[in-house]
Image (tube, rainbow, N blue to C red; front, side, top):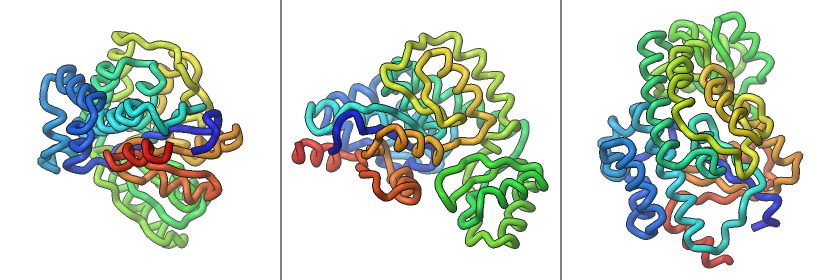
Length: 311
């Protein structure tokens, strides 16, 4: 792995969940087991059992998927740190949408128990907002951002995720998304993929969730970040607790600037990105943003063991 000052940790968001995730970490590393136990205790039910055994339709629900992914991702981090070998400290941390919550815990802004509680509340409030103001999302492949922005303006939809060149996500009211997808296909998009989500995330339709989160955030203890966190909405570093609090509200209704976040870190010396958590979604995006950057995934026991062996 590269020089410690050139490493970033990135954490995946909703959609990377799968039944069975984290079980091997729970069984192999006391630090990971502690993470799952803290989550179960703070939430008052067996989130660990849901991660390990499902059922899948329950795990996929926004209210469950969000705390589950934060828990498994943080357990991956703690397992890797427990070995004491192979995992250099980061110069930056970042998370994709929900993954920003794991980044907060990694940077010491929130205790993990408060982080998983806040992620659960985020999921609950986003689901409720989706019921009050129905909507959906779609991934658009192979269309220029400027062209898709024009389509969004015409259809009253929003660019929700700017993930990498050629992969964008739009969000909005269901009928508007249907129209936007048709227009994107007519304009030359190679694919348009409906996403299985419970609302129009990262648009103003999530305002009820913002209102709910604004009441919960002041009840928790936020600390100054131990390492800069790249904000989803600005693609710039957050270095204060107050900046983090504002970002957690802003990201619900605004676009995730993931490509910009990665590009900022590269411009500031990052040569290695470590994706910590289930799946390889962010690694795939990284390869489309800049193939010269070294990537590593830590999502299971095998990856943690490989760290130890290479150190």
